[in-house]
Length: 297
Image 1: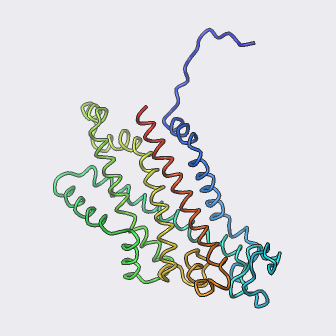
Image 2 (image 1 turned 90 degrees about the horizontal axis):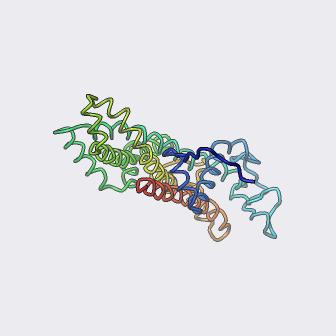
Image 3 (image 1 turned 135 degrees about the horizontal axis):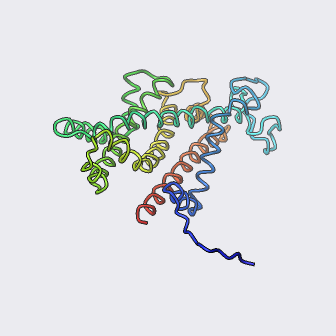
């Protein structure tokens, strides 16, 4: 029996709840979020989950195919490479390099980009004009090419790769955050808050920044997929992670000469790169759609 209610109050959902309601209605985006969570957990706890030492060589088990092959070994689920190292262990370890470092790089670029973007958005006159010209120049260069140039200056290596990709992603964040702040400054509630006597810092802290987190999330997800591809590409070119690191791009490069003997050595890390980028792109597309729906409502 239905219960009688004296008063019926409509529940009002907050912006975050509305965003999640719009996001979870997109099945592809939810699948992407699940894959994103899986890669995040593997990148964080991967070193604890590897069945073997990723760098342990076994001369008696060279180029073993995956275990479901007739020539495979059940001890090595995804086979071994040309040095007898377990492929599964190296792929799990590689998540910490390719996906984990991409997360760290994107977060670092977001923090620096937020600082510079706020400075660019709240500036006027000559300083704003200088920011615009520098950003226009930086955005004309693809992020991978910019990362290659920076690595060429700093030298190859994983640490230099982090700084190179972070600096390459920075113009995207600064440009996006600056445009978001400029749009917020034109809103009526910002003008009303300024008429009440609020200064620029108060407007930025209490009005603008709370209304930009959705755009920051979208920018971060887009930059993360770029960071994954750039890290893998630099590793493939020999400018990023150096051997014997189990980075996915480097694993593809090391197995190029063995493509006919052990095609799984290239297919497995390449497939993981594809799925990782796909998951981030699905989440990014879902967030953009959810933000647009929430703004329309």
